[in-house]
Amino acid sequence: MHELIKNTVRSKQIFLGLVPLHVFGLYSIYNILLGNAANWWWISTLIGWILIKFFGIGAGYHRLFAHNGFKVNKFVKRFMLFCGSMGLQGSAILWTAIHRGEHHRHSDTEKDPHSPRDGFWHSYIWWMFTLKEGAVNVKKVPDLVRDPDMIFTHKYYYSIIWSIWVISALISIDLFLYLFILPALITLHVFCLQTSIVHYPKLGYKNYDTKDDSVNVPWLFFLTQGECWHNNHHGDPKNPNYGSRRWWELDPTYWIIKLIRNT
Image (tube, rainbow, N blue to C red; front, side, top):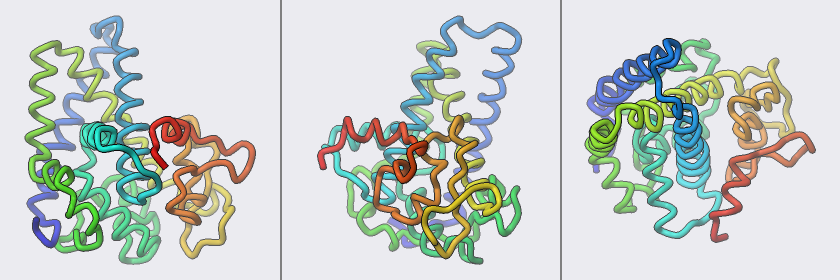
């Protein structure tokens, strides 16, 4: 395991992840608009979005791996790791090293890799293309780099993704496009939007007096669900329930967590 996340990892994220995801994703949307998609595409997309966005990224990458907010058994952990990987947002080690190791440590400072203080476009997606070599240190996530499952998926991340893509495409192009690609594209841009908007103080409110700009943004709930209660999260990072401070702060991701958690 390399000590630092190198530029080669960023290049792979762009050319083996972000670029093909958008090419195939736009093609899937094109088919839908023309009426060429299978009549069950929306069911497949909904299932894929729940697995990738809620189970994989929201509950898995964010609340379990990045913040150790709850415990699950090994089978559930591996399934969450798989679903999160299908989100094309990087390996769990890379994602956590950025989120826990950089964003939460240096939130809305010059060391925060995606603060909107550097501009909306930068915070939304451009930071992924301009992340400097050595900016992310895996020493800040020692629990993950000691986990064989995390190391395996980090080392073979794109081999795993492309293998799943090819196998699903051989079974059915529609299965590939609407169970894996479109849900991952939607999830990526939902999190990109969330990363930006929830750090604009004028667009939301605070329950916690944090030193950063994090706010809760109710009007983002339709897209981001419980992740929109971002100030709650920054105020109490290890708590897997981002809602409940006020009666309207609902958190569907936590409802899933309550079904699968051990403690």
